Length: 141
Image: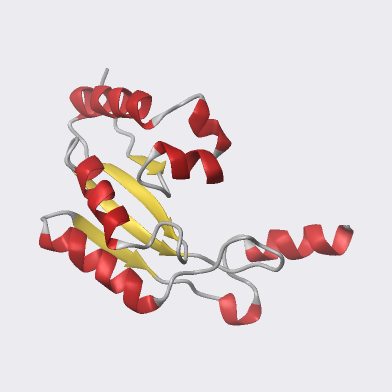
């Protein structure tokens, strides 16, 4: 039981409806189930959980989404990484406006949630995370 691992959860949406849309695995592992598992992890380790949250334009970037994420953040000690989306060709989603990401960050930080914004690097040359793999898949098609 002497676990020394840190845990980062790919959350990306603050409720089951939106998570089901972008992460079909959520239907088998709802937020309620994740809450139980995260509380167990925290009880055993005493460590914070990190929530990874890619911010998509007009999908999960509103202050109502921030309020729902704040409710999740109150489950146990945590930190939140707000991540700029790296746009790829033919994708259904776009990256949120920088001002909206900043407002989202401020909302959480003002309520005591340790929050970081992870800005994308390499997107100007289509070399950011996820873009290179997508280029290869498109080229192979």
